[in-house]
Length: 338
Image 1 (tube, rainbow, N blue to C red):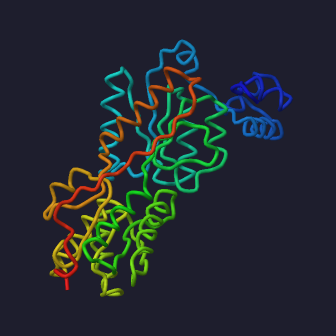
Image 2 (image 1 turned 90 degrees about the horizontal axis):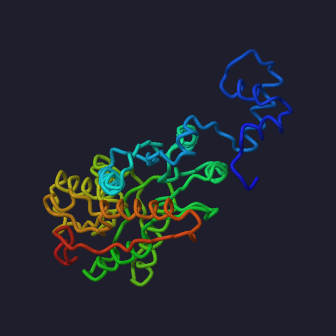
Image 3 (image 1 turned 90 degrees about the vertical axis):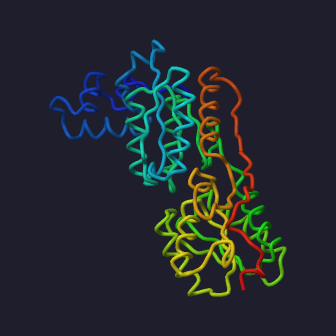
């Protein structure tokens, strides 16, 4: 179906009246089990979701943007949200944040709720293992959508991401240039497209160095996990002199974990983060990291959605932001760490 599905389409496919279809989808009336099943199957096939704010959408008065994200508590996400909100609110929009917690089923419920409420546009970090029909659901309802960080297979939405492979390539070469050869990759537990690209950049850099074997060590992307993981990593691989981290939070945890072991980041073990959240510069020692400036990244994301809202027929835009190496205090020469 090339147009947005309507209640009448559901009724026609199910072979019932529009009134009956409406009652089934609202859970009202006394409808037979067989008829209910036909209506629900028809709605699912057409990707129909009732719109509770259809009138406001038709009049163009809706000024609310949804942002479906994962792990709101992560400081990186908080800074991105600030950038998004500051720009969109200046343009007269209200931003509603929904945390999918990287759960595909929770995300699916959020997206359906989003469509029912008739928001003007969507910013979306797809959950790992996103249901294939979620893209079709948004497309069938013609929801102006910009995906963030993780790009989807169908490539039907605008996208703002990060040049992850290039970033960890630069980070790992920075360590190699300081004489390191025993370098581990620390952080993350699922092989998302983002983490996969970052690990690939790290591994590509190691190929250029002799006596360098990749060591990928899983842990949750939070500070406490980093504290615990760096200890177990060094017990298993005591030859390691440096770590490239999946994000700043796990890197800051690793720095703290080293301190608890009586070691110093930059002197005994080198650590590089990823993101450049505010705490990276404020920590002691200050964290060397690959900077993508989360706040500015959020503004770039909001700008991309505004372009789509102003010109729905414009060609799709896909942007990859390049990370910049910020040298601070957690990287040192390998001969100082033996």
